[in-house]
Image (cartoon, rainbow, N blue to C red; front, side):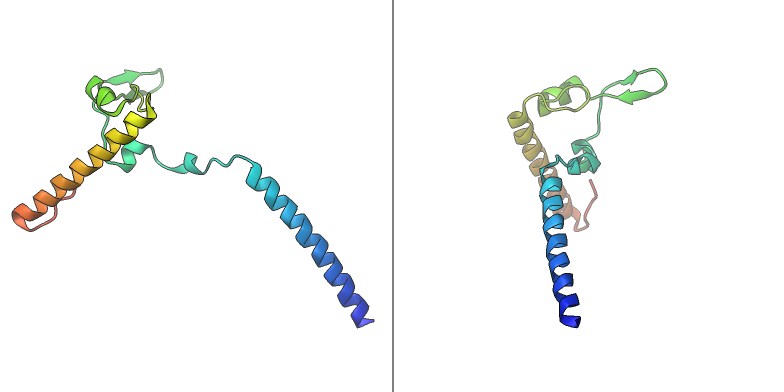
Length: 114
């Protein structure tokens, strides 16, 4: 009888594993907004919007300057308008920022947070 109980348990466990596998497949096919929880690219990379504040009713927001828009290929809100140019500009910005930080460290021996 214990064996019968074990085989029933194994059969139901197999069914549960099958159901769990189906649920997992279904969940993996649903678009996940994993990146929606990350801060915007400019915060992650230390870029500060330099445009004028824009009044949008109950609050105001700072936009990116014309110069920044051209430099990064973005619109006033920081959304890329040309993804390839944006990626290249961001890579260049990071490299320049790293070089500046390294030079600052070499000049006086102490790191400077940028």
